[in-house]
Amino acid sequence: MKSGPGSSGMRRADHVAIAQFIEAGDLVLDVGCGDGQLMELLQTERRAKTRGLEVEQAGVNRCVAKGLAVVQGNADDDLPVYPDDAFDAAILSKTIQELARPKFVLDELARIARRVIVSFRNYGHWRVRASLLTSGRIPSLGSSKAWWSDGARRPCTARDMAELVGELGLKVTAIAPVGGEKTDAASLTRLNWTAEELVFVLERGAQPTE
Image (cartoon, rainbow, N blue to C red; front, side, top):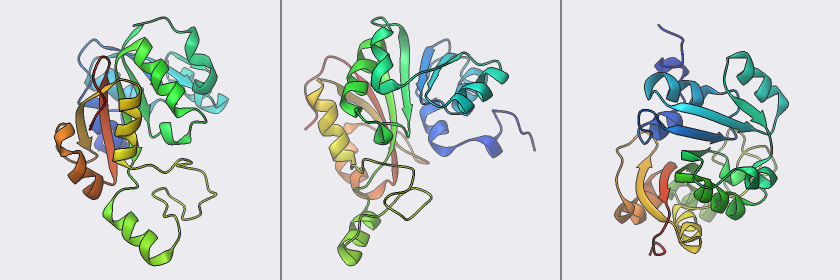
């Protein structure tokens, strides 16, 4: 089996879901890029030109060792240095729920990129609701069951995310459940119950999502 960035053995499911929304030749900013796996996938399979922003020096070092263009920085503070419309797409892959200033970051990315692609854990999923009802405890959709563990710091549902999008005057142009078929915002209510992880594609200049 191949072990390169295009190999299914190396792919993260949300990365695959995100990649379908990247067009050939797009200039893409991956915010919270980690070790660069998504950047590699987009370069190899979508022929995208990628740039990365990563807060951890270890992640930056791994990216640079692979020849990826990544700088160390904190999205909560450093995005204002980027000019308007600098990128075709900006990506937050399981990052927005870990940010100290998610609204600020999303607003900044909508300024510097033509579209913003966000993947996140959906705490509106029916199993999460059932677990909260029966246990009285906030469930975790990460690798650990402890609420204080690393992972999603800001539990939110698909409707919560749509509300934030609307407050910023953005439009949800497409939705994809991770591992499922892409659809549109009309499927939000259903997906808020049935999808554990979602990808939202956002663009500027629209009325708030209902």
